[in-house]
Length: 359
Ligand code: IPM
Ligand code: MG
Image 1 (cartoon, rainbow, N blue to C red):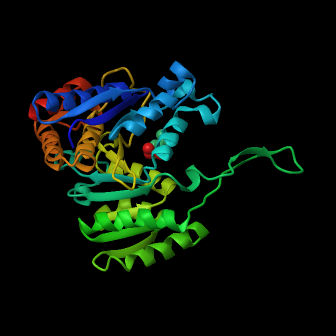
Image 2: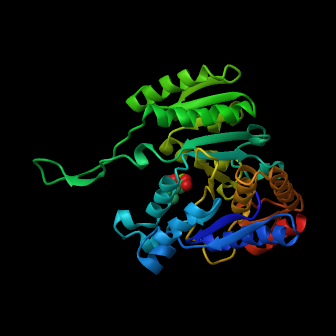
Image 3: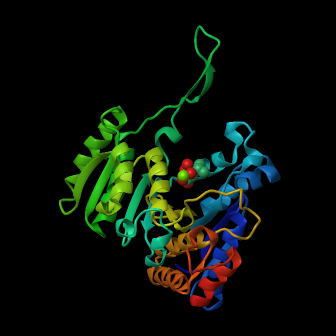
């Protein structure tokens, strides 16, 4: 793709610090003549609320629609916690995902061999781990209507309510993404649900089975979400690709990230049917360490690599970035979240620069 437009949305908290490193890397590739992209920056989340009163301003959404791909830092923070729910930073991100139709969220949890000792699990349980969580991102309980807080009829007690709905077509398209990806990897797909309790899961299972008829070369299994959480900690290498709902995927991907040493390492890609994507680290805005220059920029840098691979078709550049991250870890450089005895702890800026140098 020539002159691709990338929209940069730093967001809140550590967002601007980690994004600065990913942008520096993209600009270094551009300066070297390896990459032809135009970068534009806009506001989302709390930063956008402060500037415009809206977590997803119309101008940002318009730029996002025009862009070929979007790279996002993180949104949210205690400063905006008291705001009415529909105007909170997180709502801006959810609206962006929904408006762009990026229903397929790919969250790879890959263990870098250099970080095995940073994991809280035993080395033999996690070394060589490579699992891909495919999370449905624009449906389910995150977007169900009606929702709200109301007074329970006949009482003066309040009750909160949310609605969980999945249509067959929503289930089918995310399952197909899971099968297609499994086909390119270990050819095993585990569909995670709660079919022993939920009707949406019963339908999910039925649709997954139906779709599997088109993928005779992929082995489909089913697992209840509680068991899947347990199995991810007990023996995570049994999994190849997991496909699941919006909320189960949110929870399981945080869990899986920690197997790899730190949530600060995990990138994600969210794609629409045409492959246009929104790329973001899976971690949040980490207000506790924001502004200190200590956040790990690698998840954002690796998200930029996913962007190059999936939206711009530049797999070879993505490989180079991922290899550069590996070399930096080989050098013993670590941000605080992935430190272990014998390594050198560096800040956000130094880590970002080290990756550029290794490139
Ligand atoms: C994530 C985050 C978001 C989500 C929040 C910030 C709305 O936790 O991307 O995993 O729940 O999807
Ligand atoms: Mg999450």
